[in-house]
Image (tube, rainbow, N blue to C red; front, side):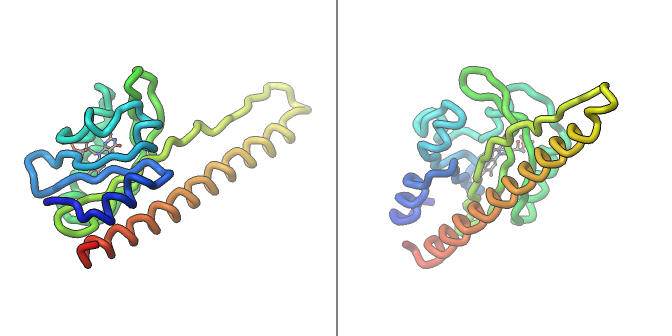
Length: 168
Ligand SMILES: Cc1cc2nc3c(=O)[nH]c(=O)nc-3n(C[C@H](O)[C@H](O)[C@H](O)COP(=O)(O)O)c2cc1C
């Protein structure tokens, strides 16, 4: 499946990491990845084209998340899942992956790095209250970030879906 040129340009220019994988080919290889994906992972398009994106897991076992992804792909439905991935330099990060069927057997993937929620521990009784508040704020911010990421990748997926449908 060749990618319509407008769709290709849109994905390449996006500021958030995006990938396209082709379900119509053996082992669902990547057919596109943008420079924001390269900034996040360290891998450029010519290094990932033709490979299944699981190489990012770098040997970190996560059978439940993988089974969830396989089910969503088989059923052609969108999914949000947290994965442990490795950058090209070996450093691990939490990848919040959004996947969407966008038509023509293509799946769009949107990768976000989730910073760990900064939890503060305090054994000192008089600090307990302030530490509780700080932790609640950190969790609230992580939740807001997740919502923002989802909204932006939902909008991107909707645009890509429309262009693929109308051949743009
Ligand atoms: C569009 C798309 C993007 C994906 N992006 C990632 C990713 O960034 N990191 C990752 O570990 N897996 C990613 N995957 C999931 C893997 O490619 C694979 O589907 C998953 O590991 C489950 O299959 P497996 O058990 O055969 O490996 C992506 C899949 C698709 C379709």
